Image (cartoon, rainbow, N blue to C red; front, side, top):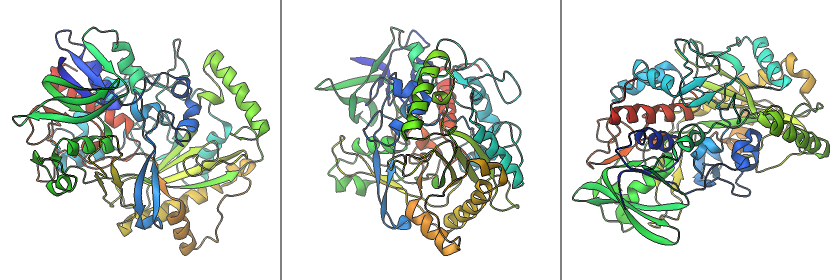
Length: 535
């Protein structure tokens, strides 16, 4: 069957693009997603992110792994990625963070013309329905519901107080006039209507309301084998669906939205990428594009966890499980309580040095113990605090392990390959330790997991032994006009007409924060250009 547009990937970018393009009844759109429908209870109940992120079992999760990381004692890192409509917005902590305005001005300076802060802010606003209403930096008419947390734990407010005791000021809005400071995150969560308290994934916000349109076809559990290139142009997609191999043709464009790992993999499987990589897997080189899979950046994260004598945090012991069962019933009744929490309730943006122009560290404060992506379970009540380096200097790669599209890509973030990242992360870990030891958190603070003697050598050993991603990979099909850029500032793949990319892989550099909101913005901006939609 033929369509005007074929979109590969139903995550943040794909959901937005499918919804926006199909607003025009004269065009036909096909969205292809490898995962399931993204409507199950694990997605809808915010706290059940804890059951999905570990990949044990694989619920809506690709559960990918990196190559052994030299900077992390040779450990392989775990990389949870969403495998359902909504993509990683179906399995993340729902945090709504745009990053710092200077991040986007930097994109423009790196060759992504038209992506400065003044260019992108209108598309952030177009996406947003913020419960705080309209202001110069917020809007209330978009599809994406953005809410204040309806029932944060007392410990999260104590975290903000503890940060203040460490001279980190309170910031009520990380997407407001300034990013610096500590506060509670806003979340992508329904705040009214029949779904109040549920996750508002990109699919829930954009795609599900559009799926009744006769000009939109959504295929789930469909594996894309390659983009079909004919006479130098993207002409369609080879896909395996319902036990059959099919060719779906695109009259106008094929749009890749498979994420920072999936997009470069599909490009290379299609013969587009570094020629030596393709030949190594006996793939015909259709277009030698050396930047495909390069420039991988991710936020490396270090965690401190404590047990707690109090029961108003999460515990996976008999008493805690009883509390969680009661919380589940409360959430089903009115959308509030512990099951409505994103777990990462509090946070902060801080500078490792006072001379910096913007924060280079981010803290996430969680109301439970998190160890190895929830792959190591602790039954005690407790809490955790995370710190990550917002703009790492280390650069990694995504390549192929096999020419078989069912095999995962080769992921090498090259964590800590640049010594500057370790220095910054150690500074952040020191600051985080001050906050969690501040008086405001004393009533909750019990025994520390993984204690050490506090020396620089011990801290470095702890980081290399336990640090890992906090799930923000970007950059592997970056925007620009130089020889290593993969797409132009309109996200068209260089040298292949009819092929576009609209996901986090196009970011020239990591933004200072969580990456869902910027990915939605990217898709809104490109969709607006494609249909010439007024703002």
